[in-house]
Amino acid sequence: MTLQDRDAPGAGRAGRIPAQPRAAGRRLGSHGPGAQILARRIRGGVPGELSVVPDFAAAFAVAGGGPAAGAPAAGVPAAGSPAAGSAVSGSAVADVPAAGIRTGSAHPAAGPRTAPVDMAWLALVHPDPETIAELASAWELHPLLVEDLLHAGQRPKVERYGDVLFLVLKSAHYDDAREDVEFSEFHVLVRPDAIAIVCQDGRFIDGTPIPDRIDGSAERAITGRAPQLTDRALLELGPEAAAYRLLDAVVDRCFPALDGLQIDREQIERQVFSGDAAAAARIYHLSQEVIDMLHTSAALTRVANRLGRGADKYAIPEELQTYLQDVADHLARVSSETVELRDALSQILTVNATLVAQRQNEDMKKISGWAAILFAPTLIAAVYGMNFDIMPELHWAAGYPIAVGAMIGFAGLLYGLFRWKKWM
Image (cartoon, rainbow, N blue to C red):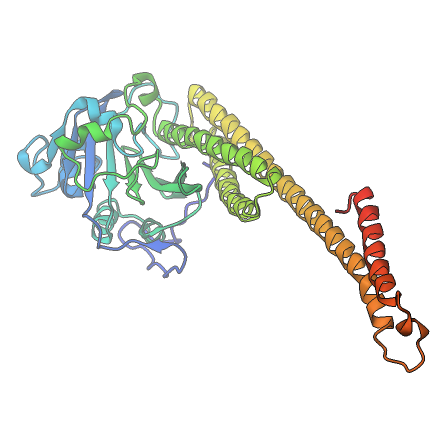
């Protein structure tokens, strides 16, 4: 990645600069169901058994990737011991939230890879500040990176802090009942020997909620919620495969969301031409969802482009570069369809305004016609209601019938004329 390290000059791992507080984003709270960590070891491209553990010390014991390059720290339970966490069957390993991450070495100086790399795969669900702080201490994360991890509600981005590659990704999910596009946010940390995924919203990539407690009984609920970890060839491509696999899953989720928006657009078109007055509010609401989708797809495109531009510097295998180009092509399709949808909604809004103006014009014609019809009798009545002393017509025996007949005649004449002009 052609990204500059954000460590301060002279600040080593033992001494980082204090982070400045940030106001943006939604800060994590400790009121949730409690953090859980999913851990597994991937050796030579072959995923191991998935375990659910309560803290990162146990996670490092199970999967490696801890402070001492995967060796358990003092007092950490050994892998496979009861304290290391409860194991979930291997079939569910590929089904953890935002899974499908294939990773290896992410060090800038890494050369072309000739052998599979062992790595730790970690996923943090329902995160809380204490668990984030534990990971930050174990991996000696930069304070700015820790601040990002503590604040959800960010746009997709990619940054590098020393030997840690940091990704923010958002997966789209369309709620048809509310006609809303919801986004599941994932923070991804890639190190030379490990990858950690933080599920910020407590949801899978497809938008369904993650169970409060993940154990053996939750296996069926987890199954199929994320990309599989069975492609050994892809697992052997190194840490950039993690970015590809997650990006691929996130981009694939954009198309069902766009399909839902397209269906609503077609419904709105029929609603507009049927004369429904509620169509305008629905157009404005759907336009806002499309704009959110456009902003997210544009940010994801920048992430994919920056990953691609770092191919030479970080020795990304050519096969993985091809995968990344495929993701970029899919993102181009997403952006193009989103822009077309936004333009279509703008045109529908214009058509709706034209139809509303036309209906108002028709109403004004009818109002004007009835006003003219009522004007003739009003004029006659006003002339002969002036009560002057010398008005010969007032003394005529046929004066009253003539006046009433004139009123009815003029009104009928105008009514027939307006009907002929199709004003009424």
